[in-house]
Each structure stands twice: as C-alpha cells, then as structure tokens.
Length: 309
Image 1: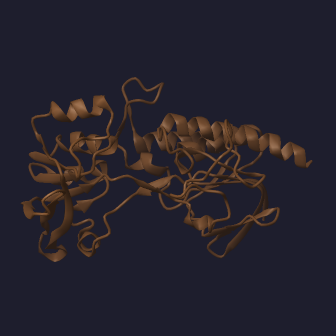
Image 2: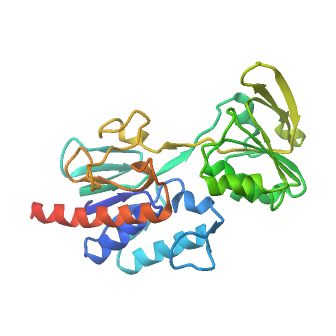
Image 3: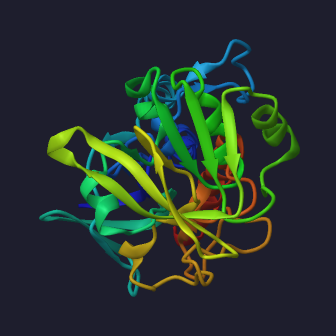
C-alpha cells in the first residue's frame, strides 16, 4: 500500500501533524505505537495547555486530538512500526507482517523514561517500583515512597505523590537540583517532602510475590557509605531516552539518539522525512511545543509533496 504520508507516533506532535495533514487532504496514516497518545497518556492533570483553564486529564486530551484528526480523514492504527527503509523512495515502513510505502514520513515517536537498569529494578517494576507517579501514585496512599532524580519531572512526581503518600523522599546524587525555580519552591515548601542530598540508589530490596519493594539501598556520593531506607514505593524520574532505535541509524542524530532537524524546520537529513516533538526537541519538551512542531511538519510535508508532482 502506498500513501502520501505516514506519521509514526501519536503524542501531541504526531496527532497535530495528522490534523493539519488531513485538512490538507493528504489522507495521512498514523501508526500510534506502543504508547498511543504518547507521554501525555501517563500524565494526569495538564494545566499549562492553552484553552483549558480548568486543566484537562492527559489521556482525555490525547483522545480529543485523535478524534479531531480522524474527523478530517486521518487514519489511525494502534500498531507499532518495527523498522523503516529510508534508502529509497517511496519509503518503506514495516508494521508486523505489513509493508507500507509512503512519499513522505513524519517521525513523532517521542522519548521514554530512563531506568537504572538493576536486576532488582526489573524484578520489582510494577511491584513497588514505577517510572510513572501519575499512573501508580494512587496505590501508595498513606505509604512512604522515594523519588529518584533532580529535574522538573522529579519535582513534579514528588509533588504529585504527596496527594497520596504519607512521606516522599527525593534521592538526589548532587547538592542542588537542576529543576526550574518554581518547581523547586513547590518541593521545598511541601511539608511531606524530604530531600536526601548526595545519594544515589544502588539496589532495591523485596520480592514480587511477598508484597514487593520493602527498602532501597543508597550510597553517599562522597563517602561511599551504603545505607538502607525502608520504603513502600520507588519512582524513577531520571530523564528520558529518545525512541529512535527503529531507525537503525539511517537519520542524523545527536550522541543520545535525538533526531537532528534543520534550523527553523522539522526537515531531517533525508529529503521527505520530517521529525517533530520530543524525538527532536531536547530543550522545551512541552505538549504545546510538540504540537507546534507537529503543525510545522505537516505544512512542510505538503510543500515537499507539491515538488514531487
């Protein structure tokens, strides 16, 4: 099957691209991937997106984006793209057993939460260990939890968890946070939050079939001393990894794997392939900027396709 445009990914970037492309009558196909709706589907309250003065739940907002794209004729599929071949045109996109061809591609696959990669972390994931406070915070009512990290997402997760947990301890390996001042202030002003400076988590203790996580081992950054902290939950907020592995190094990326786009553009190193949202934005990482770059990509696709005919 050959299409004008295939959009890979379905957060604010991919679905905005689909809205604009569909309205331009490009009949885009969207493969929504492993996490349809992107990171916003694991975000509870979105309070900073213009037009929603009372805030809106992340999954609900993504559902509205999707319905708007479908209304104009975008075709959306809850399927995952396994690989792409960008060496020839039309480009080839492999989805399970299906092969699709397209004159243009928009990549909006975003980024995923980073983990510490311990054996105990893998074993206890979903049994007291989580990378998403907004998904799992509810299960820790009146319990004591740890949050690992020092950026905005760590502050956000810690603040959110105080709605449920009796005590939240942020474990940070340095002596100061890199989070924005407003987020730090919320944390410092919250009586339920304690901060363990100069420490990193080195192991997690507990058995999945015996109640899950019971404690975490932490190591002092300077003295090397290891101690154990009792906790019922541990939330990881240590950054993100771009979801670009499926590209198999066919596009120019930075050393972390984020796609490099041309200045003031969503164009990548291959003509006809565009990238938008968190897969190429290492600076802002907001729903609104992702949506903006999704709009840019659709307009650029439309102009590119005009040059082909």
